[in-house]
Length: 190
Image (cartoon, rainbow, N blue to C red; front, side, top):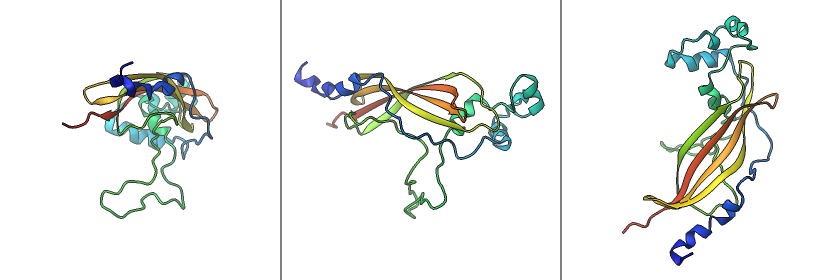
């Protein structure tokens, strides 16, 4: 490896960790069970007119326990709570203040080299079973599937592919998610 490629060696611990599960902590399910009205509100702007998603009897006639949740809504219903009583979500009164925490997760590993930029490059979902009204969901897991260091036009970094699952309150996997991020440091400006 030449000295101009030394930056790649910083990614070797991540390459060596491919296959490792990084999120093994407690499982915190969504704040609420999926409600019929929440599914209806999801359908309204889409004008998604499928009786499986709004008529309990139709859903049951097709073998579902209750109204079927659209697969495209699963990530929304799998978000953990943004706020709980007693929490301070906005610590600043500034006009563009950002929340102190977020239900959106940023997957990182302790051996990942520091980077200042990122963007998602790929998102795949494998739907394994339906979610229905009354379920509580959770997005859980951070298994590193791949790490590919690469220099691009925007900078030097690595493409990291992570796998996570959406599970229901019975701990059954509803969907498997695979997301690839490019984490990088921008090229110096001339």
